[in-house]
Image (cartoon, rainbow, N blue to C red; front, side):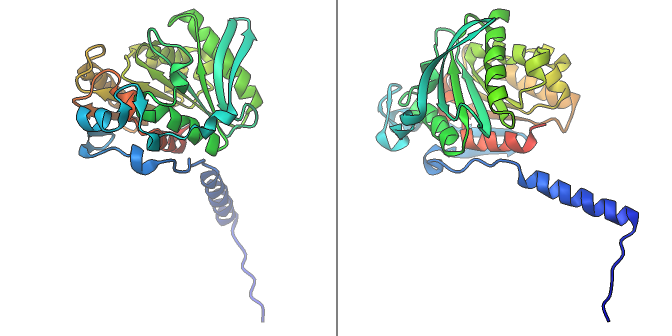
Length: 296
């Protein structure tokens, strides 16, 4: 005799919720590996919750990794085939003309990552295959291999005008890739734009994560739309950064957790590293996969 199982309304609702939760979890993008063995952190000196200290040594991490120190990475760290999907573009917006380099899918991207350079930089810095130990080449390949888009733009300044230009750039590509998670990485002074984007109503409600690489802090973040949405924040900082002292950035990181113990923030300190160390050493795939799992 057949046995029929009848679910109560509560049990039925629980089952439906479980199925939707599993489906949502399954939809979280995970970036596939690209040269993970070469770009893995060399050694973890200590790790406590969201705070990690990574061993950094100039002789190993610059001199042995680069064919020409600080200018050209060894060949094994780089795959220049990604240049086939790289374009130097100009976007005309109400905020001004925005020159930018795009790598990967300019429509229908699954993930969008922007890199905003620091003082004296340009859009070319973020797509240089050989400087910073080949780490920009890695993020380019990670985006191209995972159906994503990587953007490295020029902008007028680190103030409101520059923020408006980056907001326009984000808006343009967000419309073309409506399902994409959007992450903004800011090197050095570029961090001023990260915090301004977090504070704006448009981008603060649209971006899904911030990466501060050897950068600055801004307590206005606590009143921003991005903070209210619990947008994940990754900090990478050299312990001997002469421009933005690690102690001050660490204090800001801890103040975020003081506001909310469960806030998605992580801090990686590169011991003995200096100002440019986080751009060279940050594990893009590890950081972004964590942020994808925490994105609002």
